[in-house]
Image (tube, rainbow, N blue to C red; front, side, top):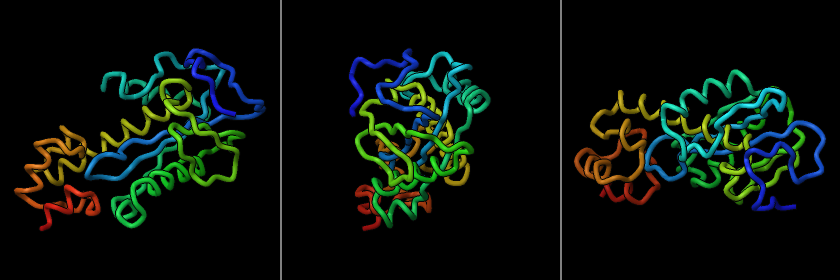
Length: 205
């Protein structure tokens, strides 16, 4: 049963007949040319709500950092997982994203009854799952997962920058900006780059 567009983040009930724990799942890093794709899964505590949850792209980096710590401290449980650059190149970015999501759900300390996944594709899971388009703006648990995934991946990009400062990963987070593309042409790809992505592949010629 699809979610209705009128469902908003402030509502606590789900338009599903569900008894048990509900996990929200989202990813960060499908579009960049470098770095892993990251997924997070979160089961929120209805008795201990977290204010200010929203799509991670709609809140500031400083607010995301604060919410990251709050989500980890106040949710019933949460997990963050990755699919590596090598897995992205071997599987393709969609399948690697679904793999990271599957890993995140399976790493949860408490088993959910239902998993709500942002987007329109679902990982292969042993529990019931529903895809929710724009779920990161509609479902608090998905919003929380989007924040965990985004902050974790941004921190990975900061680490990548320390290893490969010529590319500016701390600024563009691996996306194909003019700065990044110029660095690829000047230096070629690093071991952080996704070799199957077209701009990276072109830099090898």
